[in-house]
Figure: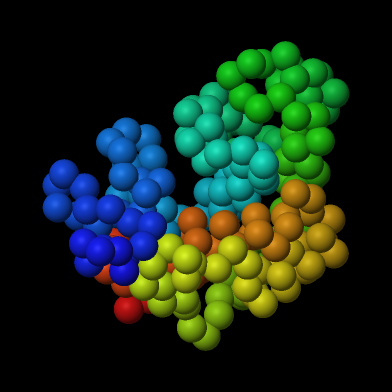
Length: 202
């Protein structure tokens, strides 16, 4: 706790609610924290989108991803798995020339490959069930930001399993971020107004 009684790494915002520093300022990041982060999504395409965007985020800030998300959704055709899986050299070249997104050939090609790997996963229950099969028995209960882990045994296992299925840019830290983003774990601070908002964890 800080001297003012707040969890270390968090602030009380002007609306009286406690948020982590990354969500303290009004705008995209706070809107994402208050309305999306940690909430389950529905369907294969939505899970695929989160998987791909977490991969693009590696080495960058999430704020960058949010600013570019509308363009990502446009060029990746709303992350329709079958559409992306059919992309070829022409689409890759167009994306590498599009300054509205992150022009990283490896990540672009990985996203296309991951769409094809997602198609293959349908033979074994599909991407949604595959990702959620790594839900732990318990979720972290952080009192301050230093208590929030960046990986877990489950994210390490998820990463290994996805790689075995042909996925790329799915390292353990990236997969833990995905687990946080869609509610597989809840790493909201215990004092946050968002704690338990997913309905998955109390």
